[in-house]
Length: 445
Image (cartoon, rainbow, N blue to C red; front, side, top):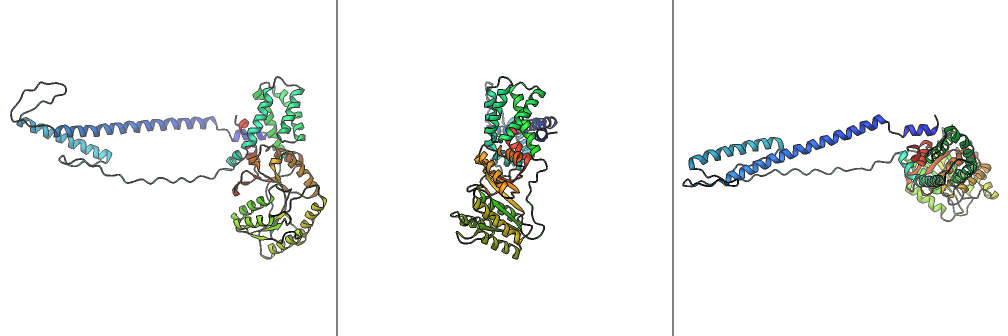
């Protein structure tokens, strides 16, 4: 069973559950209607008691019998001897009604000579509702909303001119997939495999063609990530060192701040190293994150040697038993030889002090740059031992397809994704939730 079929099965509601839910809803509606009818009967009984009391109180006792014409709205006067039993009977009736009303509705009636007074009900405190934390699937669903809508629009626009399957159809499909940032190589591969799939499944309608395209994308995504390790490797003993690399503006410092908060919440002792000594404000930015997260920061003066700052940080991490050391580095273009050599110098300092470190070298990529992010990843992978990808700003772009290109063409594991601006919106990568968030409309449709 391919990834598409597994996700469709996992996120679809079985028919038996749907029927049970509908029956439960119907039973609830009948119960509510019954309760409303009971309330109406109780109200009618109470009103009858009040009417009887009012009528009895207004009967006069005339001194002499008088003949009165009987009409539907007239009350027939009676003699003194006949009125007393009537009043007594009416009073008994009121008492019986009052007793019945009191037992069913908890209402106490005063004696006939006094007005009825109802006890005031105690105020009921309003229940306080606490917003539940969204599930991982919900976070991905919301964070990938733009990518999902844009991808759907592109596929729909492509199929709007669909007439029949020919070579022109596949050429246009390749262009559409490349525009969706799945990568050139991936687009070519999908197009070639779809030629056989469309014929095999005899897909003719727009809906059938769309389903085949997305099913192939999802299953290819699952194949590319087979056996992929998305976890962060921590040292068995001593501090774990994680080195962050990438170009300026990708979000390295912000990612470090969010990850530091995450591990601090897990009870880890975290240390930050401000080795970006060239960008104006970089040291201060990391120090602000350190203060916010409640973690320590090792920093030197601006324009100082980044490798020297890293050395001080590693020594402190070892001496003071820190669990994790996050190393921030200056943004550098992957084609600048001197900057890449500087990065290698920082790595040598780390390895000299802790032979097994760095345990992770994370390349931070800005998802909004699309294919440029893929090119950065290719060149960084050639020049340094990148172990994984952190893809930031996914919530602000329509280019979520870049993840497929990274996995399919570079075979690099995506470790974390940024799904929003909040500290908790940096999430460990989950392949199934990502694919569902990107292709939900077709998977569940």
